[in-house]
Image (cartoon, rainbow, N blue to C red; front, top):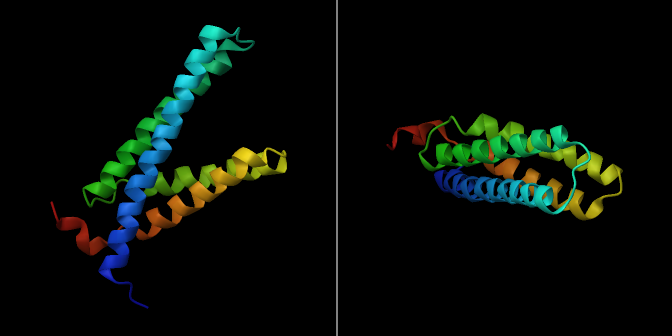
Length: 129
């Protein structure tokens, strides 16, 4: 079965926007955690710093993965796929822990972005730029 170029283009465009949305969500979490340190006392400051650093690196990484898709390059595909596989795993544990209001949207966003990233790169279109 041969997929059309328009399918790849739609998947690529969707991957760009979904990865940037995920990056913004992580940046929002970083801002929330930074504000939480100002307005509340942290019980485990080293764990909070680790979460802030990890979320910051994740946000930057997802944004750069989206630039790979926007430039028709393959370097953004693997990080996007791996990050969304991790997000689906995290959502499983959230759902099993009865945190459905966060787990279900995370699972849906991760699954949609994963599929878009898988089909958003066509080796033939890599030489546009």
